Length: 289
Image (cartoon, rainbow, N blue to C red; front, side):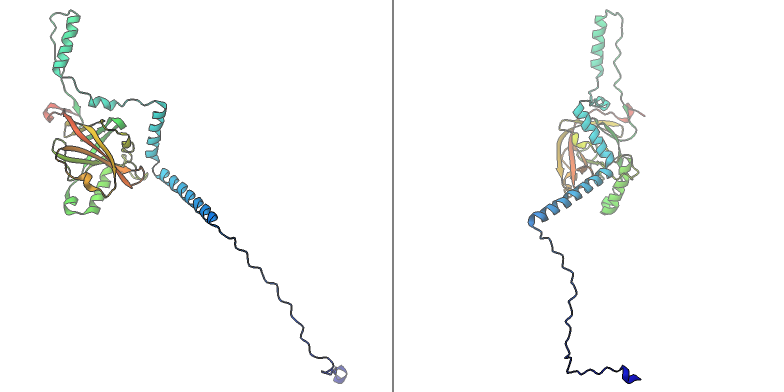
């Protein structure tokens, strides 16, 4: 039976022909957009602007307290609502007993008051029990914190920096190794213009407005029960590496230091002042509180 199902084909009758295969469709490669110099610059500018906006928002968020004080001060300036700080009274020259007696005598003569005994006014001023730095221009009355000179003597700079950062939580800090009021030399004091919002200190932005101080402004210091008045003589900005601001001077000098611009540590704002008068008294002549 298999013979009936055989097909006899003569190979010479049907020459073998290969059927050409159709090529499979290939995906066309995407045409790359040609980037011109103008396109590259435009994209670069977008990225720079976006980065600047993000950086600005970050700086504002981290230093909102200091920038709030600056904005509030600018608003008062623009609207003319600045109120004179009551701390200005501390730089007024106190009346001497002679001045008070002369004034009392004149009033007595005008009132025709007979047999009046003129009692001189007591020139007694209440001094704080701790050391204080008072800057009326920016309405700041700050405790001065002193730290040990041990780490400075050992030249352990990391320990000194840590100790100073801890001390800044309690006020402004007297640089160890610098002078003190009433003595010749340079007394350096540093304070925060801004600091991390999560820091536990209450004095994170006390020098945020220090840039408002101008030459001729008065600064008051109470040191060990004695009052000193300084006058600002120089304001400048230096790099953090400039340690000449800490060097001793031949005369008595007060140097205030803080970071600038606010929210960065790129540079240092330096305010120099000289003593104008010594109005303090010894502890025996002071009433402390």
